[in-house]
Image 1 (tube, one colour):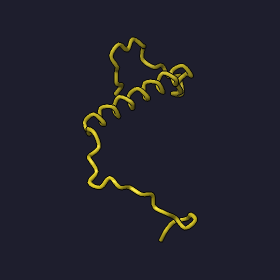
Image 2 (tube, rainbow, N blue to C red):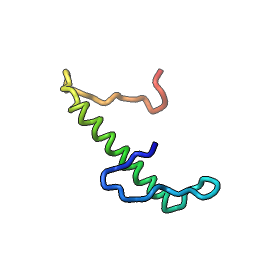
Image 3 (spheres, rainbow, N blue to C red):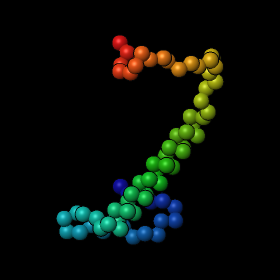
Length: 71
């Protein structure tokens, strides 16, 4: 299923005999994919709304004894 974006005038992507896309088509796919991801994330964040108010605004960094995982 190919998703079409508004104003998308490009022809269908054409693969060669073994199914590889040309460099130009790969670039087009990458751009369309990035646009789709950005659009989807923007809609997700709009639906989620702002982060909730914290109940305790006093955040202090956790001190460490020199790195590694604390057990």
